[in-house]
Image (cartoon, rainbow, N blue to C red; front, side):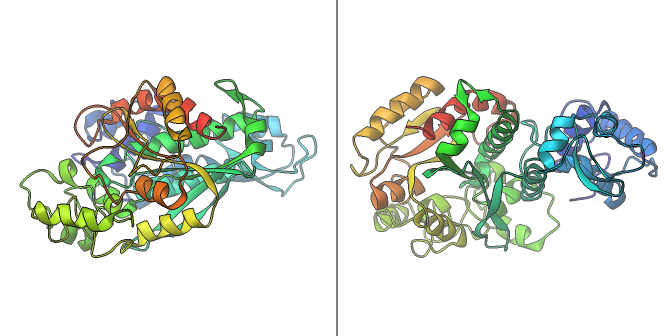
Length: 423
């Protein structure tokens, strides 16, 4: 994480503001601007945690914040401890501790025993813009708090970053959801991450979400979620223009539009639009690029030198082929519309399901879009497997969609994510 202080801006500032507000320090609005109130909150937190109260979030302060951001701590049982006493000290519950420590007897704990103790705050919040490090930490924290989750990687990005997946459930029925193919559409990532957390909480509590019994759903369906398909590109947009890695500085030079990079950058770090890099009429997409004067890497609309030329799209294709997905949903922004067709490859039931999704989300249903009409992930899935595949365009306005829309987007889509697991 970057060192941040007064005058800093960006996703790391939002992360600190959100956390401090949730644990009782008034850092002001979660706006990504390190102003006086954020400075005072940081200094107060430092003073209360035996740190130099200089208001600068550097390595020492990040190290203390990191435990809270992960959402758990490890604790060695001391003489006289009970789970109830430990839970009170961490502002959590005995049930949360039992969930994080499978097989533990809540009535018999041993001195010297090592326990995972979840804090009484959520790991994922919808007011924090995603970066690779934020998502990595969230997945690590959720796995520690909910050990029944399966987590892993489907491959690596251009810069060698893991392309994480989370599996919800153990059923034979398989579906898959993904987000952030496009770098400036990353509001879709916290929506899927929040769904993972809410699902895990409901499973642990033997609860339900929108009438779905989560324990029953867990046994019926395996939901594979890839929340950050394009981590390098997302960071390029998130940290603009304050880069501390020359790879980002070099990539940003490909933006010759004269417009701010976040408003135009959809591609990966090499300037390839991942959602134009799949072998679904890719040659026609290439012809459209040439007609529009696009001949090489740039912020958007360049589909690469060949189909699946990029490690991110290859990983997605390989992962998809390795499974038996009944339905896939690719999350994008914006327009509040569901696209369900490509070259008449969609089975008849696909439209029926699209209309069910529309009834839940309030989104329109359309066959396809003239923009990026070829070579997308959904297009490739339909062509390759002839099963229902969808692109959900969420949010309203101009990309990148304001993060303030994330709670509404989540409410609109939670039921659709659950429905996709059972149709």
